[in-house]
Image (tube, rainbow, N blue to C red; front, side, top):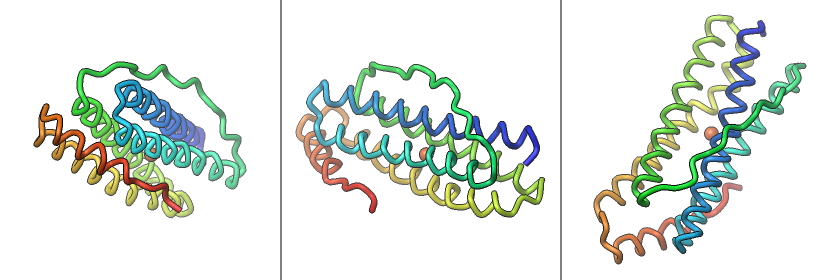
Length: 164
Ligand SMILES: [Fe+2]
C-alpha cells in the first residue's frame, strides 16, 4: 500500500468510528424522547458501525500497518423530528458508500487484490444499509406526524436483533 492509499484507509476507519458516534448520538435523542424502539434500532446500528471500524482496524494490522486513530468529530445532538434523524442517517450512509467506492477505485488502480476482496464486503453492506434506511425514511414520511403510525413504527423497529 502506498502512503496515499494507507491514509485513505485510515481516514475511512475514522469515518466508520464517526458513524458509530453519530448513531449513538441519534440513539440518545430517541431515548430522551421515549422512542424506545427507534432508540434500540439506532443503538444496534451504532454497534454495527463500530464493528465496521474494527474490521478496518484489524485489516490494517493484518497487512502490517498501524491502525492510527484520528480525532472523532463531535456529532450533532439535536434534531427536529424522527424523519429528520433517519433522513440524515440515509445521507450519511450515501456518503460512506461514496468513500468505499473511492477506496475500491484506488484498490483497482493499484492492483491490490487483497484490498478488493476486503472492500467487497463493504460494497455489499452499503447497498443493504442504504436500502434498509431508505425504506424506514419512506415509512416515516408516509405516517408523517400521526402518533399512532409513529408508535407502530417505533414498535416495528424495536424488533431488530443484533447480527450474529
Ligand atoms: Fe459502516
